[in-house]
Image 1 (cartoon, rainbow, N blue to C red):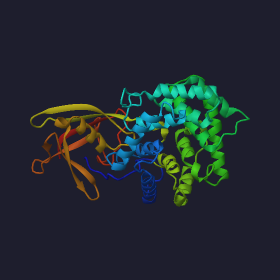
Image 2: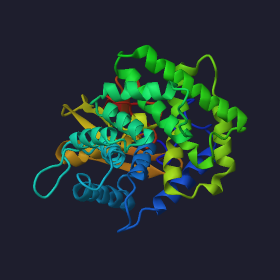
Image 3: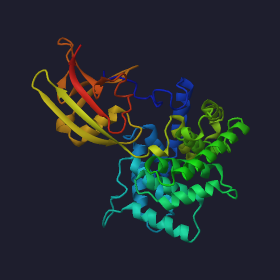
Image 4: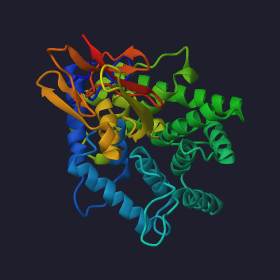
Length: 385
């Protein structure tokens, strides 16, 4: 019915850490610490922006706007000459998750296309053997997310993971899992090789968790393995991952998470998402009134991957204010309640209100809580009760 708690950072359902007040508090505290690292004139961290988007943080906040602007400026001044391929990849994921087109980054002379820059840097670094397997994995993941696959690089990564002489650290293996899960989901080439590598590596991560009593690698490296294991269940099935144990480790050692990068890596996994979900959401949004002075309008909007429905309404309004204007009333425990759309308000005497649907199923959460899925059709229909 268009109401709900705007501050709920945890998704509904079984994904993410257990739906308790203590877990919600953990996520909020880590998010607060991470956002405190955003300072004017400090080196911007694209991983922080990506984590904020995956969590559905407030993209209207001054800190978010500052970080996004700094990352755009850094791309313009440093991407072509001063960044490694891995740094370009991080910036692409951060911009993409912010609904910014990495192929059209505004610049003084002409827009910058970061995709061929990443491809060229990656191949040059591989040719000169100056690229780490971590950066290779990050590059492969980023190219996969933007649908510019590098099949040869993915096969080489899978072979490295299966090599008995390979001794990759936990962060690298976890990033490799994310990259190969993406490749496996989008292309059937070398399917058995990639799936074999994924099964081998994920089982290795589970073995380390068992030996470490919940810790995978060390505390600062817990974030990427959590994301990797969240995203790769079918490759270590029927074996199960003790996700509650891993989350408990993070919660128990909360005070040790002080570095923005470690926090940015662990937060997505705590809410059941990962860098695989960096691509923004496209949501179709319609408003319909059949009671009096009929109108029906529809639009498609782009929102960051962790966004709530309220953000969809805001983007639609910002893009077409003469059509998708709306008003809300905030209630202490229910959050924002939509009382008017397109100048038409609900009326208690006439028992009318705006009801929200996903396709034709009424939403059970409010606009401040519900998180739309990619290509979902959200309808606001003027209704009676």
